[in-house]
Length: 543
Image (cartoon, rainbow, N blue to C red; front, side):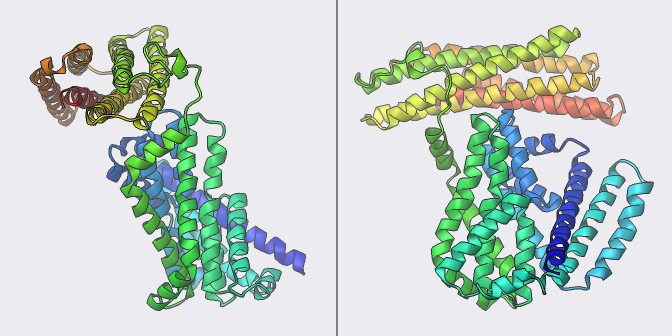
């Protein structure tokens, strides 16, 4: 009978995972129509937006694993940077607590059959009778129904299982058992690649009085570590950028667990006082853990980015000794090193300017081969710029540790800001190239009037890049005039607003098809963002 019970429990867990997968796939497709990557990438413009993107996307899709792996893959493709990824990961960790509350409010509070059968009755016909978006919603409803069914079956099968018997012999809240349950949480989550399974198990077992809330908390903490293993697997075949994001995800949960673990008794005692029962306790504990850890890391995002980049240096063929201007020896004056670093920044800027200029051909080029050659040129230039930027940052990190004068510290901060803004210009240029390639693949073409607007804003951005090079090469920074950069920035903004106004007018008149409209709006927005970062470079120079 024990073997049959084990098979039943494993079968129920498989049903739970299948239900989560259906809900996940259905919701992803429903909210994005196969553009899930694109949706996340559009909403990471600053830390707050990235955070809420991770939170709401996870709450809707019910899979923090999907969101974190997706973020890692976007970082691997250089479509989002480390800072943006951190915001999404923090949001996803908080968003995943919604699963626990769904189980508490619906999975245990009501008769599951009352929820399960109507959900299937609604979901199945929608899935089979409808197409497109409605079909995805049908799939999500079926998935939710299967989740509720699996929770009910799990409650029935786990009560008399050997697992309960084992727990009753290991239910004292000793340090040994707390560590044991922590490891069990890691192990189960790593195998099934879903912390929701462990959360559901903990809530069900605790609600039936099978083990203490303290041990349930340890299980939840283990699940938080275990859920990062999927991301590590995904990043293992990725580049340094993917590994950095996965590393942060692990660091985020690991530090949270190490901080919470010594105070588990006090935390458990406090939460027990403010929650009515065991299942509410676990959902509350899970939420508090992720919110507290999330707030801590969110406030330190800039510092965390610097630390991760410093201790995960990119291994490229280009070492410090191979830089054209920078001498790897730190024996000479720090001020000389800063001058040399500025020279290297000039070289970095010239690569970025070439990347922006290469976007010209993607606007009007009709020949498939020449168009793709243009995209590949931008990819190569951006990669070359990335390698140089990473190497300069390693060098700057070494300079930070040297004995700098107050003036040297200011110049180092100035140089770091210049590199950061130029990096953003390169990243946005690469996004533009990918967007143009996607547009062409979908045969989304612009009418001459709209194409003329894109050419105009590209020309203005080209003017801004020339001014940046001119200003970086200016030996006397007092001679740099911010008003010239302000004038071009204002022209770019005016061109953007005028292009947007004309676009909306044509859209209302039905003169622009929907697909072309989406690409046109995104393209001019990216150009406007590039203009902003180029202006920030000059602002950093005159500061």
